[in-house]
Image 1 (cartoon, rainbow, N blue to C red):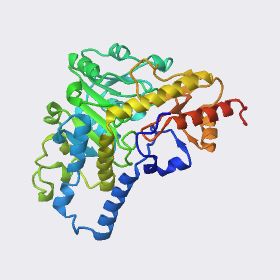
Image 2: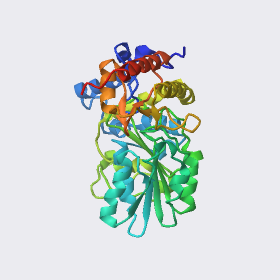
Image 3: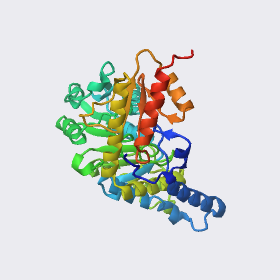
Image 4: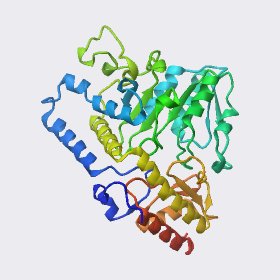
Length: 388
């Protein structure tokens, strides 16, 4: 039986539940939690003793370095933001595509991927085009996206891995498609970073963002944003603050020399412990090896897919032979997914309802016994009628 990749003792909640919901909130390793607690205690208890203006300006240097290793980038290409949504919002308001142009996305995207552009449409009249796959989500392909791209496309903005179906889109193909039409390739890697190996240089994407609290196993309040140098050189961030400048501790209110590279997105005093924790979590994952994590996670996802089909589930996630992440989603006839998930949670199996199905998303801390137990409990629940 396949063991977990990480010590289960680093994730104490596994003693009381089969946690299979990384696509919603992943578990944070105990060593990472302890590092965050030490940082919080130092700052809250000692203030600027050991954390003066210069130290505050440098607090994210280690995070950027580790995130750069994770993504195949340079530290100067990385900004630490409060969320992926904030970073995407800044990109949308900087680009400000106008009337007569369009932005292409997908109709089953997580809303934060499309909402910034919909808000921009109210401001400028840009057309937001959504590839329609909701009727057959299991068939999503990059060719579907390409059908809506033309010479007036300003950006293609999609997820690397779809949150509800696990479809993994080829970032290089997306970038080539965008650039062939003079558009930007903007990718949300929140459902892939930490689980799928990423090389932004090879992929040639223009912008990539990722939240911290899913497959990166960190906390709310931090995210990473990669800007390709060709974008960073002309990027004028909509949000500007003291941290946006070349020398933040200079505190010169009369001049605004913006920092080089992606760091100009960082503008304010934010939740530093979350950012520090993100750096520690990335280091934890890099020590395990993202290649190994993907292999492990997909093995568990495959086992889930086979078991769900045997239970009569209609799969809406990516086929096993297709590029995908470790997200498996199935519908069960007329059974309400919310009720099925509630009953699973009552049985100590943690999953989530998404897109009309029951979604499981195992990660490096799970093993085959978690999958077996979840399938057994789901079978028991399906054999009994709904109580309401």
